[in-house]
Image 1 (spheres, helix red, strand yellow):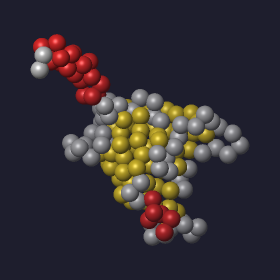
Image 2 (cartoon, one colour):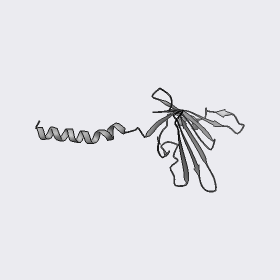
Image 3 (cartoon, helix red, strand yellow):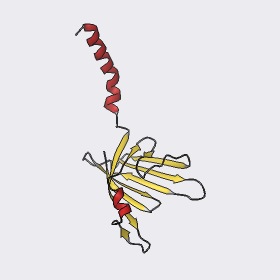
Image 4 (tube, helix red, strand yellow):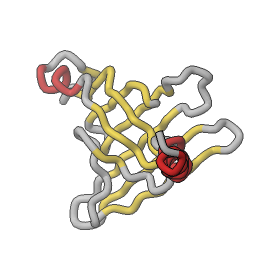
Length: 137
C-alpha cells in the first residue's frame, strides 16, 4: 500500500476514535425482566398476558437529559418536565418526569449505577400503574 493511503487511513481512524470510544457512555440501554401491576383489590399481579408481553422490551435513557426512548417508556414529549439526579455518593441515577395539563402523570426511574457488575438494576413506574424492573448497561 502506498504511504499516502496508509497515512489517510491512520488520519481517518484518529478522527473517528473519540466518537467510537465514547458511543453509549451517555446512554443506559435497558431491558425489562419483570412487570407488575396493582389489581383493583390492591394485590400485586404479574401473570396477565398484557404484562407478560412487556417482558423483554427495551428502552434507552440519555444520562444527561433524562429522556427515555423506546418500548413503553417514552417521556420526551413536549408536555413533560424532566428532572435528572446523579447521586455522587451512591452513584445512583434518578429521573422524575411529570406531565402538564388536565391529567398529570408522574414517572420515576431509578438505575443502581453503583453496582460493580456490568448490568445495573433498574426500577421504573409510571403513575404507579405499572412497575417495571430489569437491568441496564
